[in-house]
Length: 203
Image 1 (spheres, rainbow, N blue to C red):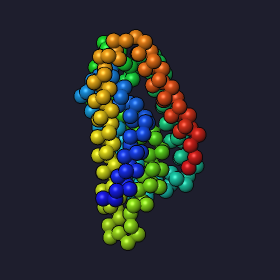
Image 2: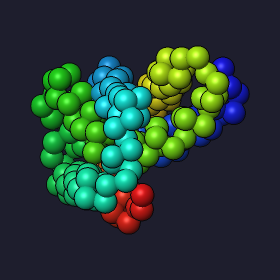
Image 3: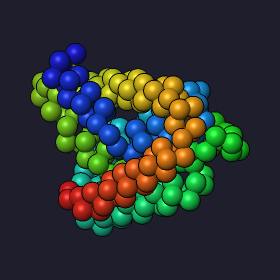
């Protein structure tokens, strides 16, 4: 396995993004088990991007302004909606101690959607992974699939660590009203910033 690929992928995965924020908020609001479920959902959300890259359909997204803009703005609007839910303490991103438990399916569905509406992942798979496939590779599709699965494994491991940490400090955070207000505003600001960054992204 290419060391440069592993290091670069780790940097990309560990960098704060929507998936990390969703896993952190799930760990704070629902504990370790649900945080792991969220990490799994975010990892599963990578699959459509991986399939696009492997089948070559990412070329269409990369070269078509209409489809790229459509997915980009849909993702940006979804992130703004998530920021609103954080501020209103409703839905998956609420960080209250006493609230209705989300089902595992609901957590996974939300986490998958977060990554599904992220065109930057598609561009990442389209532009980054092929650089590590040799031109004389006998089975480029298999190599692409292998690297993609390694990336997904790293994503789950890092996000699970984020979720575990959030769950570990859950009681301390939820016992402080000031900390909760700061946390809500921070999450909301982060989602708005990510949405704005996504909306301004170029192919």
